[in-house]
Length: 234
Image (cartoon, rainbow, N blue to C red):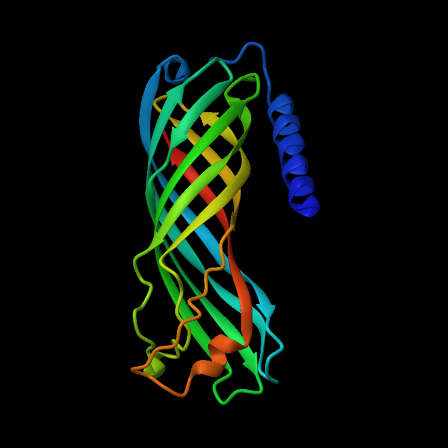
């Protein structure tokens, strides 16, 4: 957590320094009306990396060693409610697509694939620093409720899906970014970290596919983590 806060602080300081270095008093201010609207909308395109924090049970020799993740992508809608000159409340529903592979030791199948399609329902509070020319750094934080519509009721041994995930989770989210004011719209680049609060693994056995219980038993608990680089068009 300390490392996460340090990364966000460095990003915020960099954003502020970058904006100040590009500031020119004589520059024309683009698209000023967006920050005066009490409610405005947009859309989001993003890339993500989904990860797991694994906690081995120690009940057997089997161990979940590491997670190999592949880049995923996200799409969503932006709804921004202006609360103050520097504060806004944001609802950013969307879909997140990702895949993770857990590597096991001391089990016949070493690689177990987990695919996720998350319906993301985040409610975020955004703090914006003072606008400098056509740039405005900001911090954002809040919570989200995610529903995994890809979660399986049964294992799928043919596709290396030998564990199951719970369908829902609650996340804490924290990030930073920069608003870029263009002539006809605002573009925001944002880096955000999300940490799941619940044990995401389904510990019940699949009676339709016996013989794979060791993959679940090897893990005492598992939390989801997601890093997202977003591009908001507002």
